[in-house]
Image (cartoon, rainbow, N blue to C red):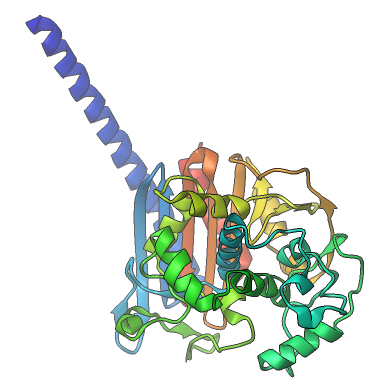
Amino acid sequence: MKLNNALVAILSLTSFVTFAKTELTVSSQLKSVVDDCAKGLINEYDIPGLAVAVTIDGKRYFYNYGFADESKGSLVTNDTIFELGSISKTFAATLTGYAQEKGKLDMDDKVKDYIPELENSALGNTKLVHVATYTAGGLPLQFPSEVTNDAEMMQYYKTWKPEYEAGTKRKYSNPSIGLFGYIGALSMKSDYTEMMETVILPELGMTNTFVDVPKDKLNNYAFGYSSEGNPVRVNPGILDAQAYGIKSTSSDMLQYIEANMGQAQLNNDMENALEQTHIKYFNTDTFTQAVGWEGYDYPVSLSQLLKGNSSDVILNAKPVQASESGTLGRDIWYNKTGSTGGFGAYVAYVPSEKIGIVILANKNYPNAERVEAAYHIISSVVK
């Protein structure tokens, strides 16, 4: 009996040492790869500050570089708040998914069901699924410059005419998914920002993520930097909160990624809300459009990711076909880019590999560089 106990103890110790060595190897290897990628980006694009965070099977790794505020010499940390740009669209999708779970809306409902003012308009008779997936018929990337308030927004929506039939082409659009998030809050009889900050973000466990950064957190809010090196912050705009207005930290964004991979402790409504954002609706020739997220069958090539995140796909209408019903699943590279005038961000995760990455910078730089860095980092860990 004593011999057996000793053998068990030896085997347990051996297993622990092996695990520790493996953990140390992963950590050391990951740091080396991230350092190389980060320093390359910083030098090439003169990026003042960069945060890279990786989650691997629930273990989090953080790598911070440079300055959140050059004038004060404030360093980037896990709690530095960056502007997420269009990654905010995935949060709008989550809020509206939450409304779906509460029985307040359905993707086959029409816009006019929530905004009676648009009763007799083309957009009013468009299904929510189409405004959610940029397939309403050609809504533009941005609102026209003359649209500066809610009344002008509604007038624009009333008079907008589709360029093609809904559900036939995808044209990336802030006024499209922005309207979807707006309707999500309407369906809950709530203000969008209030619902996001008092319901959605707290239930996700994201305590340092905001639409409006509060006064007591402003010291953590990084300054973005323009191409000329001037400090900038995002300007207010129509449906900005829904389309590009969320600010967050690398730590909170790993929490978000893990929640999307089913690794966080959430209530049933929030779990199901996230699942709603993973439902596949339309296939392009490169990826599948869910709500907010774009999904690529995994394993995926770098060239395919670069094509899917290219300016061509962002700026031009692309043919789509309706997807088979169901969610994207776990063997998928989920991703989203985001930019504002002074920030550039990228988020990607692969549930089947239990791995995800967030790259946050306080300068806008090419999407291709973000995607390539993330791909290189993840590929160094997943063999």
